[in-house]
Image (cartoon, rainbow, N blue to C red; front, side, top):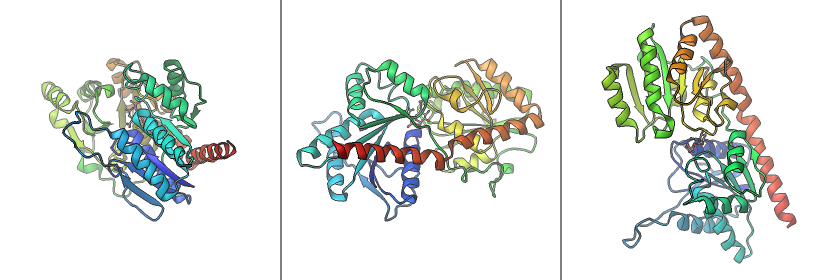
Length: 379
Ligand code: GMT
């Protein structure tokens, strides 16, 4: 199939999922066209099966806001015609599903028919999409998609609760390339560069937005390091960074926290981690938790959204209510204090992650494309 993929090209989970999906689909023989405003960060290699088409939005003094969705729709029209793309898969409803629908309508005028698959990722539904400013357009574009997927049962439930949806929603969870995250198997895992032998390594990875509650990460870590030698590795950049640095300074733990910034080497960082913290306010799935688990790192998380579908309480880690720092600390110490228990949780985490093998999940998307195309051809 010739598949057009629209996504945010940044370090966020939806962009990562879209990129990894495109790469795997190309390995399975499909021709993939990424259409977005920058080359996706995890897209290192372009080949004769993987193409990238940049959406340009030239500045014009009249525009207070640059009309990105208009430029995207136009680019989609051009690329579909030029490369004979058969299906468009858009990740994150805002504004991608809306722009794709506009492109579809423009193409129809010229006798070109193309179905749209929309994948809902999280805040496009829970935080941003359900805001009255966007809700009518998001409802409309979900209902006008030819197929809709959500990354967890919880996100599907939220979508049906918050919007008036007439379409079916398929749950297709996030997935992972298990070979990339081999449990304790990373050949150059240089733990010694990060921490002393007796120090436990705690990790958090996110785009440091308020929804991630990074202040809770710091509080839990602060409690842990009072009980045992420990280091915190913070990976990612975002609006909370300054806040967090001040919090660490006030607590006097700045020397125990390593700020990595944005990184393309998540697998290397996770290979020497003992525990992963994800105390999010809301989280549709928690791809970062899955990446940690695939590396054999147990997860201490909140019990919000789709996280309980991924992090199994008492097995791969523990769940607590949002903001319950004391409970998270208690659970973290329970795992970290006993080396044989830590080992067991590490093994369990890796085992749970096997459910999300990309070789199992990517074919689900392929089946949806085939189904959608077949239905579309009948119409
Ligand atoms: O909704 C967002 O925060 C954006 C999105 C992203 O691009 O990072 O993240 C969501 O999509 C991921 C991939 O499907 C999920 O694993 C994340 O849980 C989800 N984030 C939230 O729901 C906060």
